[in-house]
Length: 249
Image (cartoon, one colour):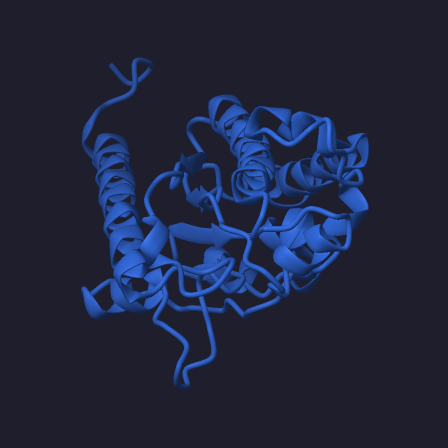
């Protein structure tokens, strides 16, 4: 089953594109999709709508969360320093990202670990979570989520495109690094899917979401991860049924 934000579900009306979950379902994966655009990680964890499915028969939880919490909710400006004429190169991106961003990121990652991963380990150690860390979104002039907040700090996506993209890249990288660390810590339970570099520059529908072509590419990567996780789960189930324990032997 799937729980998440707009990377898993967008309004099913024109002109919004399909998402990777839409294409996974078209490929034949039986996925119950509880995702809703705009949802934050805290909202998903508080509602806990996915637990009845996981406590029931579903072995895989596809999870998409954190984007609205770290850069996508319109509050990006609070994490950025004002534009400085002495810091105009893409390599100056670290100058603009305040410590508050990293403090907030640690809260998000901690909530993910304490509110989802550890409870999953306690309730269903044999079931798995597959979670991604988004791709390098591109700020647009007057963009609702990235461009406008950046412009309010004097960072213009038109005249400082490389710098603005580098700032977002730094933030996305920081989130992916944290997710990768969680995957190493909970390697039998938490699968991290690196989607960075998947969406081409011409494949963005808007500032935060890929178009149909991008969604197909993301779906292909999820399908590969799902198939691998399913095979592992089946192998373990077969081993428990057919292989005698050392004590029994």
